[in-house]
Length: 398
Image (cartoon, rainbow, N blue to C red; front, side, top):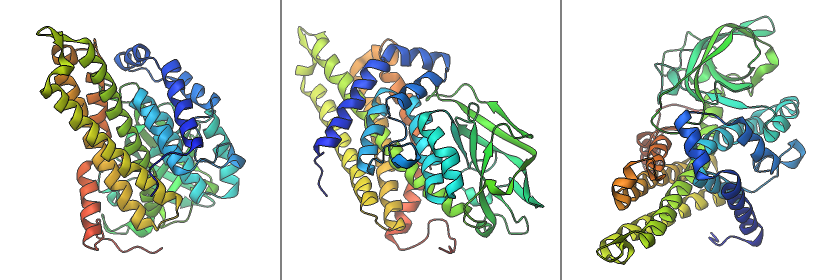
């Protein structure tokens, strides 16, 4: 694997970094975090600078970026704001647009992908339910065929973009006779537009971090959707969901590297400016040790993420990609938490306050260890892969 960026990738990095510094100033990000304010304007700014639909082919409104380049975009956006990244990059593109690209019909691609890439359509991804989290196969939401249509009843929980989305990618059980937890053959994916009768949302407030990303509960009450809303085939829903999460884990790992890098940037600046005992604190070896640990862990996380991106670009098999994206997401998100905790320690009392931004980095980084599968779920996937087992004890038909 070539770990050096080529000229085009360096240009992409510089372009996104310039956008973040210009359009995502820290004080604006802090105000949106304080007010729990989702910025639709920011989504449109990303789209207008062609930073939204990176990995989507040009024929569908994207840029056709390779996965390594897409990871660079995600890292730089995450360095500016993990909350902006959550709505725009991981949900809008990695979970929704890329899933439609992989499994959708040509009509579905033409109908939704250009709008998602331009920010004219906001997407969300509904997998988790109020009582079902990591055990996604035990989902209780159900969809019943009625003529050419489907009738969906149930709910989804902790859905990023859920309250502002125009389009929801939702997973539901179509065969209620199957035993709970062994219902993979009945799960299907559906594309449901917000205007559909029987579809409503409730915003969730009071989150620890990622506060300016919209999070909501989705509610479906006798929600009738047309037959062509089915994404892929009945019975492939779980596979579609897991493939989507692999894409989300890759972009989330990239974002986590961005948070860790933001911590390093903040700490090196502060260590040069803060004077104690008559000299900058950066001259003290224990302070340098904190910086060294942050830098080494961040670079290790970055290399894990880039390895996953390279394997995706090379067309590696799904199990290899699943393993590598889980490794990248697990290590990078936990490294970001450690970097943010160290950043607060280095800043002392100021780090514990909103006067500096490192406290937000910690709150946001903790969120990354939870979505797209908790760190414990990533360990299950990695451990099962090492032993040649299936992490979720299922039989798949590919």
